[in-house]
Length: 136
Image 1 (cartoon, rainbow, N blue to C red):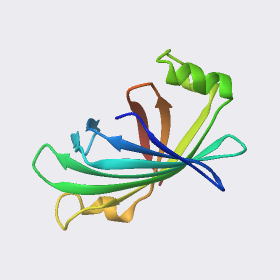
Image 2 (cartoon, one colour):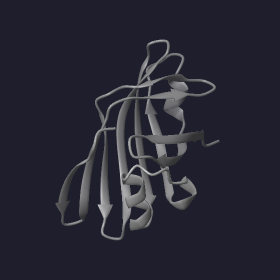
Image 3 (cartoon, helix red, strand yellow):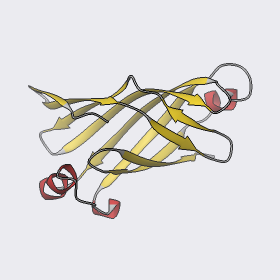
């Protein structure tokens, strides 16, 4: 992730965070997060961050899939300052959950179009780590 671009507005501070890449790995899918997506966040006046993520995934077998994530991150100002300074902060010190939705072409990955996954995240200075679980 690149550093956020910020705008102060009437609802709070908007963070536009360019996604520069990443990886995905699981039992039924693996590949990369392609650059060009963004994490659009509203940092509300009560300290809650509303997350709105849009990225594309490229599977190891060459299929492109859209991922949309909507979630919430909440932490104290002290913990957020530690995260942004680059300190390793245990994810148990804050709340970071996200509902994940997919758009995949017909074929091997079309099952993603019929599920919602829940992600439990951890925010580090330079990247985000999300463990995703299909809701059954």
